Amino acid sequence: MSVDEERHRKTREQLKAAAPLEPRVAELVNGVIARVADKWTMIILDVLAEHGETRFLQLQRLVGGISQKMLTQTLRDMEREGLVIRTVHPEVPPRVEYRLTDLGLSLGEAFCGVWIWAQAHLEAIERARAAFDERNPKR
Image (cartoon, rainbow, N blue to C red; front, side, top):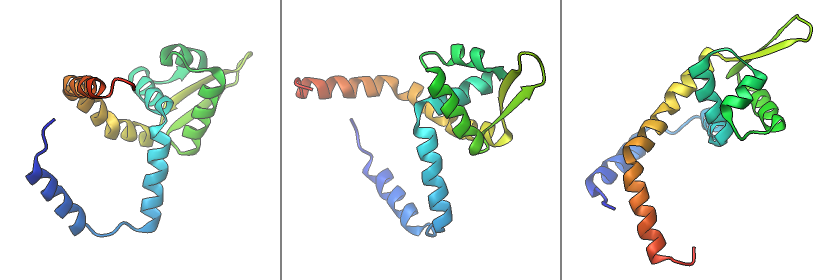
């Protein structure tokens, strides 16, 4: 793996020159990172961005591997954060659908860069992992 010392130096300088974050902003960023670092939130953001308004069971199928309890909990957390809207249609039985809010969509767009980064660096990461595993066979 290469290290671009000049790039690292410039990044450190930019961070030092930046105004300190207001404590409320820092708290919000930490909370958002904690929410989005949960893999289910990222996947649900992606699925809802791609499919639009989606029923609970369809969402569970599209997400894949998520339990009903975890999907319910994650959707409630996302609703609390203002990322999704839960709509209950007055039918028998009730039909419940979820869709991203503008805030949720913008968060998905912001983190879209992670997917792009992963695709662009997949081979480098795989090489780094293989080299590490060779040096550390007990892992």
